[in-house]
Image 1 (cartoon, helix red, strand yellow):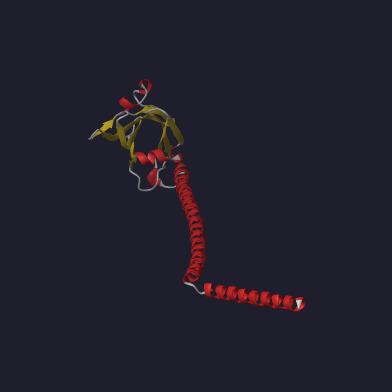
Image 2 (cartoon, one colour):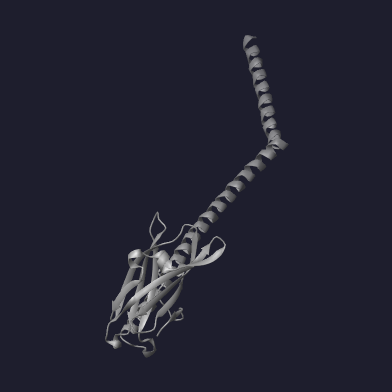
Length: 234
C-alpha cells in the first residue's frame, strides 16, 4: 500500500509539473504577440535605422570637409601661380626694357611702387623702383616725390611729400641711375586718414617729369608695373 501511494504521489507531481510547463509556454507565446512586444520590436528597428542614418550623416560631413580642404588648397595654389605669372611678366617687361627691346619705352620710368606697414605705428616703408633703357648709355639724375590721396573724415584730401616724408629729404628722394635704382624712404600717415591712391613723380635733371598713379591696395601688395598701368613717359 505504501508503494502504491508513493506512485500516485509521483504521478500527481508529474501531472502538476506538466500543467505548469504548458501554462508557462502558453504565456510566453501569448506575450510574444502582445502590443508591448510589437512596440519593442519597432523601437529596436527604428533605433537601428537611426544609427544607420547617423553614420551616413557622419560620412557625408567627413566627405564635405575633405572636399572643402581640397578646394581651399586648390584656390591657394591657383593664387600662387597667378602671382608667380604676374611676377614673371613684370620681370620680362623689366629686363626687356633694360636691353632696349621696345624703342617706345626709352627713357626714365617708374617701374614699381611698394609700401609696407611698420608694425605698431602709422609709418610705412616706401620703395620706388626706377628703370632706364640701356641704350641711352648715360646716367640720369634727379629727385622723386610722392603724395597720397585718401579720405579724412568725409572729405577727400591729398597729402603731399612735405607732409609725409622726412624733413631731411624735404626736396624729394635723390636718384642717379644708368639702368636701375631702388629708392627707399619712410612715410607717416595720420591716424584718421584712409589712403586710396599713391602718386609718384620723378623729375630728371634737364628733362620732363615722369609720373605714375597706383592704387593703395596695389602698392601694399607690391604690384609691379604691367601693361596698361597709369604712368607718363617723357
